[in-house]
Structure formats: structure tokens, C-alpha cells
Length: 344
Length: 114
Image (cartoon, rainbow over all chains, first blue to last red; front, side, top):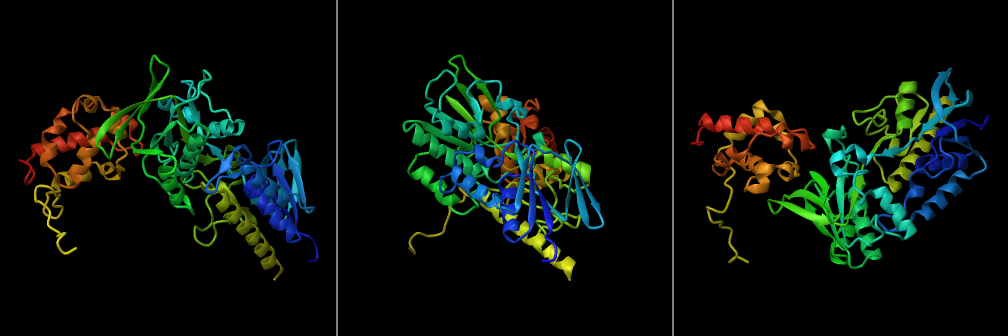
């Protein structure tokens, strides 16, 4: 290599860290930019991961090793404001009037969790014992699944599709991971509270990933998780401080009412705000779902419409960790290919 | 195995091929959102009529789509057109208009809809 090419990777979550590591190990210089104070994105907030219930700390450890390569310069607390392209190279304008030069860019700005308070009728932020799937992971980590008043919840409900497949909040797409996360979390609740009764309220059980269906079956067989097919219309609280949910049990064909001690909302995934800002400031195209639109759904899922700008991970669509890591590797391969074509 | 047979009691099955789907077609032409229902039941869960009587809009819609019109014709008049189901529907089906059109179609006595 005559001169070492330099790639800027925006976002140090799973996708950015993996892509940075792959490029670094192939001999390229990488600057890894992260808006937060630390790396690890959403993964670091999670407890156990589906489908094998591996501790997320193991994944973080792996990612840190990848991004810890000597060719990677990590810069945290930096917000990217705009990308400019001049004569085939890039100038990245950052917060604090900074500028970083690079030969290619990987955008790995990830996703934001749907803010469940936007689905007002589901009571998040209104009633005490309604939490999100992300909140529950924190409780698992603390080994402290308690109601607001300190009691152990004996009857727990999970609501699928909160902020996904819902036109009323502007998200028609499926977030893909919430179904399997609910299955995993339902089992986890039973492990923490063996005598708890757990119910999942779903529209469709989308068990498309490796080992998902097996986990779903295991949850019924070994943990006695109950599945009720019906979308929640609204939650209220009764005088005993219990949550009352109303669904149609569509398979029984009748309205169903149930009291619960705790309700977990399976928050969907949305294009991150930082991704949206970048799209607007730098003319990157987004799809109807507001995620970055790849240049081609079959052959260019890592490519943007701007030569030299690539995408990795959940900034293009809801994606699990396994797929994110694969997608990030593919982005690195696309970058290497891009440089190779420049030489020839 | 050969004794298991394949016969179904006539009154039990939905005879999809011979059933009259004209009511569903009438609605679907005028209110295309009728087609995008995913049977989640959110409409029924929020429905006041459904909480007090046997009335499930989700069920009625699927029955019309299967041409089981007779089990819908009378029941559909129970709806009070409050529109809560329209507010709740995650697919944006104009449920209120679906009901109005169904009633209209029955009134026009389409084919077997006596």
C-alpha cells in the first residue's frame, strides 16, 4: 500500500466498533467517532442476549478488543455535524469547529428506542408499574425486579409492537427484535421470580431468526409463558394499584380484561436522531421508514448513494447484534473494494 | 387412516368458493383500507358495544371477507359509530366507514344479502 488510507467511522456501537476493527486489521487507519462519553452503544445497557442468553458483557469485551486495535483512534464526546466531499476525499465537520479528513466514511449511527410515552394510552410515565423492555434489562442487571412499592410482581405482562407496526405513531415497519426479546425477557422473569405468571400480548409472533422458534417453544414448555393474541387498546390502573389491560383475545373471539402487577412495553427501534440530523445536513437519503436508504437492497445494502460513504448496522434497518456485526464486516469489505477500484 | 375420511358437515364449514363475497367487494372498492386489517383485535378491545354484547368488528370484517354475510347482517347494526376503533387501529383502517358501507351494501340487497 503506497499510502495508508484513512476511514472515519461515525458511531461506536456494535456496528462502528466491528467495522473499525475489521478495517484496522486490514492495515487501514481508522478514526472512530462517538457522540457519547463511552463506546458500546445500546449493547452495554442490555443484560442477557437472545437466543443463547449470553451476558452482553462478553459482546462488549469482544467489540472493545476489535476497536482497540492500534490503527484505531477513538474520539468520544464528538458530534458530527456535516460531511463534505471534495475531489474524492472527505472533510467531516464536528462539534467545536473541528474537522477530520478521511478517504471514506462508514456511518454507523444506529437506532434510538421508541419513546414509549408517545403511545400515551399505554400509560408509560403515567402509571408506576409500567416499564419498557430497556428498563427491565436494567432491573435484571441489578437483580431487583420490584414494583414501585417494593413488592415482588407476581403477574407480569409483556406488550409487543410498542412503536412498531403502528401507523398511529408513524412506524409501519416491524422492529424484528421485540418478539424474541419478549420471549427471552419473559423466561428471565420466571427465572428471577419462579412463581410469577407471565403473559405476552402479541399481534404475530415473528420468530424468523436462528433459534428463535426453539426459544419460543422452550418458553412455553419449560417456563409456562402464556401467549395471548391481541393488541392492547389501553391500560388503566384500578384502586388496588393494579394495572388493567384490555385486549381482544382474537383467538377466543372475545374481549379480555386482566389485572397485572407489572407491564413491560416492548419498545421498537427508530432511526436515531443523530442519524436523521446527519442525513439532513449531508444530503444522505432516507427511506419511508426514516432509516438510511441503501443504494440497492440486494447488492448494495452497505452503500449510500454518495460514493465513499457506507452504512453499517441498525442505521439502515432494525437489526439484531449478530446481523449488525455481519453487516459491519460487509461494510468494511465494501470500503476495501472501493479503494481497490480507485487504484485500478 | 382411510377411515378418517374427508367429509365435513355442511353447516360447519365455510364454503369459500360458493359464498357471496359481494358485500366485502363493495366495501373494499369504496374503502380500500378495509383490505389492510391484520386482525389484531385492537378495535374490539376498545369497543363499547363489544364490551356489553357479542360484537367484534374484527370478527365481522373477516366474516364478510369469507362471504359469511348472514352472520353479519343484523349484528352490524349494533355499532353506535363512536369511532374509538378508528382511533385505536394500528393499520389506519377507516373502521367507521367500513361499517357504514357494510350497512349500505346490505340495504342495497346485493345478491344474496336479503
